[in-house]
Every structure is written in structure tokens, then in C-alpha cells.
Image 1 (cartoon, rainbow, N blue to C red):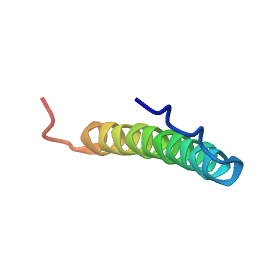
Image 2: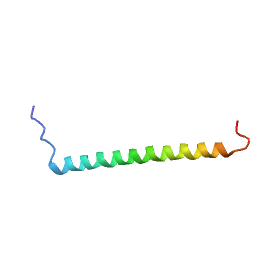
Image 3: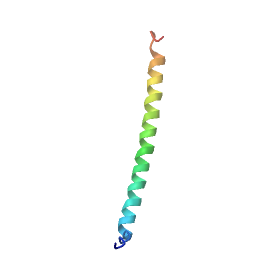
Image 4: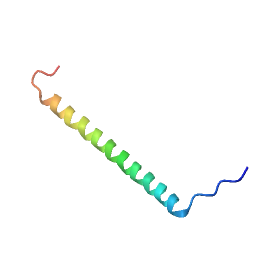
Length: 51
């Protein structure tokens, strides 16, 4: 069975770039979720009828 050729440098760079973009997007989502939780907490704390 022939051995598969290794990935070319441009393909490896594209995959590495994609990994960085996915990580940055994941971090942004985490920040947004934290901000949403903080805003909801503030909102609930401001409701006079909150239990």
C-alpha cells in the first residue's frame, strides 16, 4: 500500500490558522456568555418583585 503524502506547508498553515480562529471565536463566545449572565443577574436584582 502506498504511503500518503504529507500535507503541504500551505495546507498546514491554513489548518493552523483555522485552529486560531476557532479558539478566538470560542473565547469570544465565553466572554459573551459571561456578559449575558452578568446582565441577567443585574436585571433580576433590579426587579422589585424578585424572590
